[in-house]
Image 1 (cartoon, helix red, strand yellow):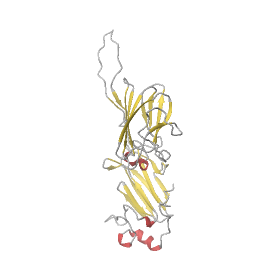
Image 2: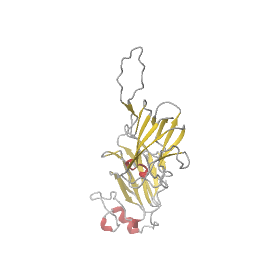
Image 3: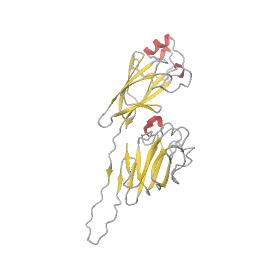
Length: 304
């Protein structure tokens, strides 16, 4: 695994800086934005670009609780990360070893490391620090279907049963009404900053698979939880041509501003496999898409 190219060309660190990094104090002139007091060589919040190279570890959380912990080893020093975002300076060209431990393996097991679209399922990985490297351990968040029961009525022999109008909730994102043949999809861009914000509903690269029966109506409640513009549109497996009329957020090539919302509805009129993708330049290629299948029968489903 290799990191992001640095904004400035990396320069070899002099011997004095190598010694100073092991002490990690502000007085030795590393130019660090913030040094954690009482950490004794612990992680810093952000390095000065002049340092050249660093490793940033982004740990997701549920509410105020981190889903796991990470230990890093670089240059003979060990670091234990206890925040969502953690950065340590590392000499350019050195190796950093990262190991992860899930806080609650039964509820939120570790699923893999993410680094610029690349992934590894090993709990320990080694990264060549050739720039400003950012890595993220991912964890599975259990989602269980919850349905709203419909009271049973006693029918007379001449009565004709009618379809249930109960809303079935598949997870926190997708629900449906079988009687109305409608699906409601809460689509949140950059939820919990998964995949560096290039994701929908906390998933990326097609990991979330939504199936809708042909002929059903789909209403998408789209919101942008990120810090840059995002959009959503139903497109083929390759290309950006709109599949169904109305199946896109406003101006998908320009996107929806951070914090803004949009609602769009379309009819899943043709069976096949498609993508719900962000059409902002480069976003879909970086993994900002989920799978949408229009089936010839059955009921809506969500698979992870």
